[in-house]
Every structure is written in structure tokens, then in C-alpha cells.
Image 1: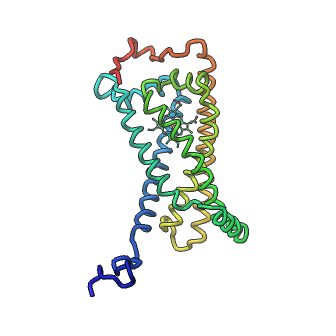
Image 2: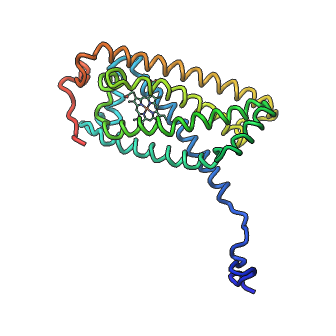
Image 3: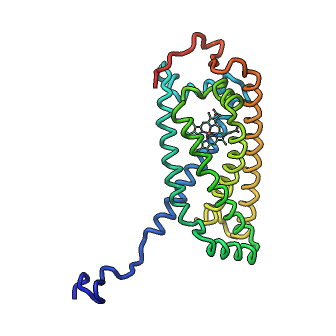
Length: 260
Ligand code: HEM
């Protein structure tokens, strides 16, 4: 009998439950996209925090990403393309992660019961991932849309004006904590899940990994808060000249910029 023939009325062997490889593939894709995003956020924090060195340093980073030092003209549209890629990756990662969220009250109660019963820090950290990930659905989308549509407004004054006069700092403050907790826990969980850096004694290396995770999270939170403070201060001092662009003395007249 071939598999398309009926076994029970209306149902053939082709409909029998198959062991699918897709859950494993999706898990892998979720880990891989999370890894790329986690590493991206480390880079992002270093680039954004160049404002702590000087306005000129942040301006140079901005112009570098606009291709100015290679092409001699600024193309903010290049930034839009990169942001669109990051937004796509965030959506892909969020779509895959959603499979793991409790889908109804019963599943939620079951999870909370397990968490309380086990009282294991890694299970609690998983819940931190769920809550911060959910918050990031909204906050990251708002930030990325702004960056994608107005890449030419990124710069020492443009960013500081947005943070202060544009009232973006409350969003950034909450998003900073959400993203640093989410990224830190996420990278730690990747190591545990795939056995990276496991060494000979898995328990001892897990303790070390957890310590490293907290050191990194605190480091990026302190760096992020100092950075946000710097943008707020510059924005406050510049509040009467909102819209004016910063150009370092050595780069006057301002470089040509291609309209988007
Ligand atoms: C290519 C994509 C991205 C670009 C070009 C970008 C650019 C920027 C810039 C220029 C700032 C400084 C403030 C401003 O100009 O408004 C900023 C701040 C910030 N961004 Fe992004 N961003 C990107 C992706 C993301 C993502 C995916 C997240 C998190 C999910 C994120 C989280 C933050 C946070 C938390 C701050 C505040 C940082 C602080 O004050 O210390 N960004 N971003």
C-alpha cells in the first residue's frame, strides 16, 4: 500500500507524525541570530560611547560609517541599509524566541511553579530573558525605525539633541537595562547550551561563566549610563540650538552629504 492511500477515512500514511528536524534548526537559528546581535551590541556600545572621549571622536565614528573617509562624501543612506539589516535580524530572532514564551495562563503557572520549586538561578535567568526580550520588541523597534529614517541626524549634537530635547532619554534608560541584561544572560546561556568553554569540570566553569557574565553586564551598564549622561549633558547645554550640526574645527567646511 503506498503512503498516500487512506489508512483511516480521509487520513493517509503521509499524515503520520514525523520526527521533524525543524525545532532543532530553529533553535540553532535562534542561537546564531542571538550571538550576532549580542556581539553587535558590544560594538554598538563602544561606538556610541566614543562621545566620552570627545565630540570629535564620536563625529569621526559617525562619518566613518557614512563612508566619508573612503568615498570623500557622506552617505547616511549606508547607515539606513545597515539598520534595516539589524531590524530584520531582531525580527527574526524575536519570531524564533516567541515559540518559547508561555502561551496561556496555565503554561505560565506551570513555569512559575517549576521556577519556585527548583529555585535554580539559571531557570530564573531564563525568565529574565523572557521579560526583557518582550520589552525589547517595542523599544528596539522604535529606536531602529528612528535610526533607519534619520541616519543623517546621528552625531555629537544630533544625538544629544534627540536624547535631551527630543526626550528620548527615558526610553534609552529603560532599554539600556533591558538590552544589557538580555544580552548578558543570552550569551551566558549560549555557552551553557552548546557547551562552549565547558572545560573538564562543567560545574566549575559554569560558576566562572556566571561571574564573567555579571562583570560584563555591570561594565556595559556603567559605560552605558556614563554615555547616556554625556549625551544628556551635551543636549541640555545645546538646547537653544537644536538642529545645528557639529563639525570639528579641523573638518570645516562641513563635508558634503548625499541626500537620502
Ligand atoms: C544599526 C543599528 C543601530 C544604530 C545605527 C544605533 C545607533 C545609536 C545611536 C547613534 C545612539 C545614540 C543616541 C541617539 O543618537 O539617539 C544609540 C543609543 C542607544 N542604542 Fe542604538 N543603534 C542601533 C541598534 C540598537 C539596538 C538593536 C539596540 C537594542 C536592542 C540599541 C540600543 C541602544 C541603547 C540602549 C542606546 C542608549 C545607549 C546609552 O545611552 O548608553 N541600539 N544607538
